[in-house]
Every structure is written in structure tokens, then in C-alpha cells.
Image (cartoon, rainbow, N blue to C red):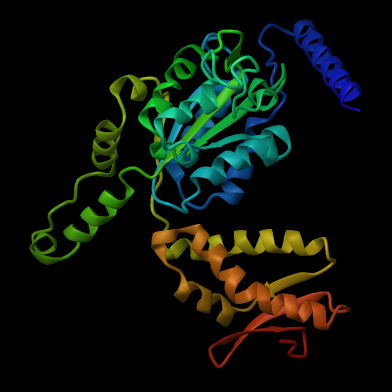
Length: 350
């Protein structure tokens, strides 16, 4: 019953607006609790102290709600290597504020790698198919949010989009409005948190640190160029200054270290156990099996490498154990002769 759901949503928004107007002038219209969002981030994002501190500042500023009404709520660029939590941090914020990560409007910019793909965001020009309908990749409901909840949009891997596509976003970042090329309508981003991710500069930074960690540079204790310098150079070489100048926060992510593996593995096992609970099952990993996963980890690929290892090494054995022994509820992962084994408390299963 779409009409009834829309009407209920409208009524709830009007009720929130009236409650806000009846409260003190300093009351926030947004319902989320910044402390809870920050706690969720610390629970699921490993390391990245500087980034999490910046997110804390952004969340409290958003909650206070005194920003410019003619711009997006905030524009944030997340920079760093793959698998360090750039996309995950946006998903966690979306889930914590809106109740589900699926309420995020995500645009994969690697699908917009050619100049004419800018029409996918701004709509087809007059005279072309679809121009009158104003078709766009943007999910309007997810972008506009509501009176008590912000909309959230993520432009993922923005460096992979054609420059004409990136330039088409500049009005959004500056005025919070996107006029469709048909001229018949515009999209309002003034109630929207805008996140962008990029891997720019990550490879160059890794190569520089490797170079300065060996040979005569290491003997003379020469310092590698700072992360900020590497990322600034990568940004200015790829994007126009006008685009960079419209970003509120540029946040660099660090590589994940081996010392953070235990926390990474715990997060991925927690995700697996969450899925297993739907089958009334659970799993734990003993010390030797954890060490095996640590040794197989590749820092170049970050948290995704841990998730990949679990999918390839563990999940097939766990699936067999569950299918062959459907009455078993608790499974333990151990090592035997260099191979992962799935056991119950007493008996080897697979």
C-alpha cells in the first residue's frame, strides 16, 4: 500500500516538525544521538583515530543544526587505500542514523567513466530519449531525507568517473541544488550528507614509504614525504581546484597494521555469526586458527582480505559441517596439519 505508507511518513514528519517548534529554540530537529553513532563507529572501524575524531566533530555540528541552509549538510572526501573502511564508515553512519545501511544512496562512480555518462546524473538533454521524464541515478527519497533525518549520499571511487561527470556535481556541493538538463525540475541536497571516496595517492604513498624504508635513505634516516603532501599532490593533479574548494573535510585513512588484525578478525567473525544466528548456529575460532588467518593476511588489501579469507578458507567447510550435521548448533574452528577444521566441542565434523 504505497499511498498509505507515504501518508504515514508525511504525518510522522509533520508531527516531528510540530514537536520541534514547540520546544526551546535550541532543540535539534534531528533525532539521532551523536554519542551512539560515535560508539557504533568505534565498534566497527579499526584504527583511523583522526578520521573518527573528524566524524565526531561533524556529527555534533550536524546535530546542532545551525549550518548554511543553502548548502549540503556536509561534504566529506575520504581518501586512502582499499579495504581500510572508507565505504564502511559511511554504511555504519547510515545504519546508526537511519536504521539501515540500505537507506544510503550510493553512486558507483566507476560506472560513469565516459563523458556522456553525466546524463545519468543530470538527466538527458532536451530532445533526447527520457528528457521529459527527468530520469536520474539519484534516489530522490534517500537524498531528501525528512525533517528529523538527513539524507545520505555516497559517490564511491569518485576518481574513476569522467571529469565532466565530476564537474556536474559542483553545483550540488556549492548550492545544494542540481538542476536537471530538461529544465523541468531540480534535486535538493540541502538536507543531505555527501560523502565521496577515492584511492588517489594511496599507491604513490606506499611506494614512497617502501623506498625510504631501505637503502641509503634508510641508513641516513631520511624521512619520506608526509601523507598529507602525497594526497594533496594526487588531488590537485586529478581534480580542478574549484571542485576541491567545495569540499568541507578531506580525511586521509591510514593503512591497517598487523597489530590491528585481531580487531579486524573479530569484526568479520561477528558479521558471520550475525548471519549464522538466522540458522540458529554460531562459530568460534581457536588461537591456532586465528594465527593461520593472520599469517595469510595481506596489508595491501586491508579488511577485505580478512573477509575474503573467511569466504574461501572457512565458509565452505562450515557449510559442509552444517549440512551434514544439521542438529549441531555451535562450531569451533581449529587447525590440523596446516588445515582449517570445523569441529563441535568433541567431534571433528569437516
